Length: 52
Image (tube, rainbow, N blue to C red; front, top):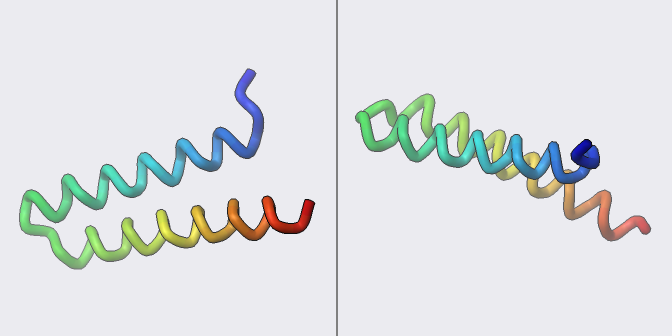
């Protein structure tokens, strides 16, 4: 099994890659939203790491 932290990190990478694909196909609005979600996930992981 994958730990919850790794699973959330993988989900962030998936959102970032999906944003890149959307940007490539000219969908700039959805790409910005996907990248925003990826950034929020990374910030959440960083905040969780600093508490411990």
